[in-house]
Image (cartoon, rainbow, N blue to C red; front, side, top):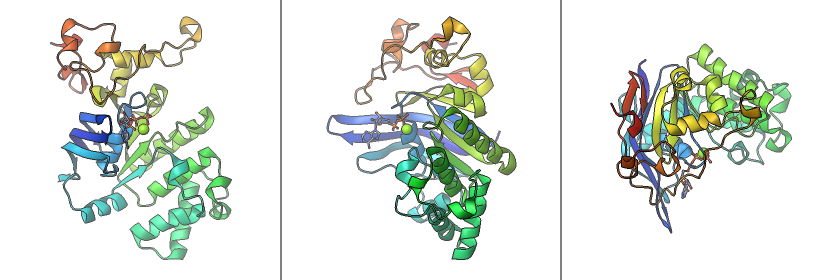
Length: 322
Ligand SMILES: Nc1ncnc2c1ncn2[C@@H]1O[C@H](COP(=O)(O)OP(=O)(O)OP(=O)(O)O)[C@@H](O)[C@H]1O
Ligand SMILES: [Mg+2]
């Protein structure tokens, strides 16, 4: 599949009083035309930092991009001019932020929050922009959208707010949608409805989606391809069906054991022992080694390179050296 967005060796660090946090440390992945790629990993592994870096939205300071390239159609988003970047943010790549509660302005009516973006990006007059807002709100399943454009965020449930965020992101008809944990705070039925909206966008508009989640169940529901991150790095990547059928990295295997499986072990989940290491002074070798029960001696000293399981499925793990 042709790549539309190519993240290459991205490094994004935060300056803190304890030292430099290597939140993203040499991450590479790509998103193809009309493809849904899921970035998955435990809390704190660098998913949001990677997503924000794509559009240069990291707070700086304390954040900084320490290296890499983000190639969108032959153009590096990390070095293009701010004007060009604004154009791309408005027309080509849209982002849904992790927390809709803080992304929506509590004192502005929801309709005007979407309308504002439409007027800014598409140059429509107020009347047409409002009509387009209502159309978008209907498209993402907000009932009585014509009346509800006049509501404030606190009058909407979490699921409805999330729909507003999606509608706002769709206002510029983007080619790529980056969605950071858009279903995490939602109950199972609402989550399924929101995932359906994403499926629809992919099918009807051939949209490319970079979907961020810590939940492998969500990955199973929507991903074409999966990028598993741990401690600021990619540990395994491949077509979702391959990774599910044949996970190779001990971390991916561990994450899959955390999936609810009613039939196995009386429905118990098996957590991965230990916690994510500090990203200030990460272990010298494989970053997962302190939690890994399958490690080799070399894992403590040498960071593993990329080993290919098949043409599109690869893993960063010494156990799979060929
Ligand atoms: N503004 C900041 N200042 C300092 N450190 C930060 C900042 N933002 C993130 N970090 C650190 O960077 C690392 C990666 O954080 P990030 O938010 O990207 O993780 P995440 O995978 O999105 O987690 P979650 O699933 O909880 O959203 C963490 O160690 C975090 O503490
Ligand atoms: Mg996050």
